Image (cartoon, rainbow, N blue to C red; front, side, top):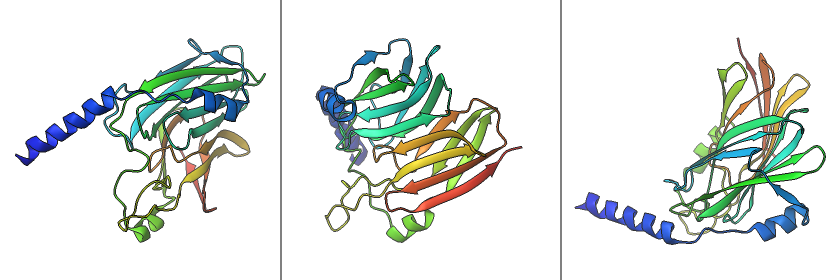
Length: 250
């Protein structure tokens, strides 16, 4: 009986989310982040992989690939229109990069447009977008774990070599948005990774400005332009804590 009621509740929740409108905040993003500059539609240059209906609003898989045959990518922005904090991340690939792809996990507060905007070296902006429906509450839901345990494990990293030039990175961190409520009912202070850097010696392979719209225990799957044997990773959070680790690959 309990199982049946729970399944019915999930069905109602999913039906409500599907019926709710997709939140669109392009005007705000366009003015606040790009000062109204021209943004071109990237039908062929940027492809997105994301679910039309997310099962877990706090853990939504999201991947994109940018391919500019004759332009160098300077940076790529990720925005989530429905989240309280619109900016989700900005990626800075290695210099002279014309192709860049990444897979990660994001949070969604409501049904939302999620945008990928690439800026080339010439300053041209290109945008692709996806509509994702969700049960909602990804920025403020979830349980409140033991603080001491969270503090002890924060910053622990894993970097796995997937293929010759592909790496999967994880870092332990709660990525608190500032909208989660504690057991006492007040909002917990925002606490999240806001900077990641991956280097091979003096060569920066990838830099990421991270926002709280990235899911807890951030995950990034990315590729490099060359085979590397060592990667130095540095992470910082908004409390100015720095986490560093050197990974050596055979």
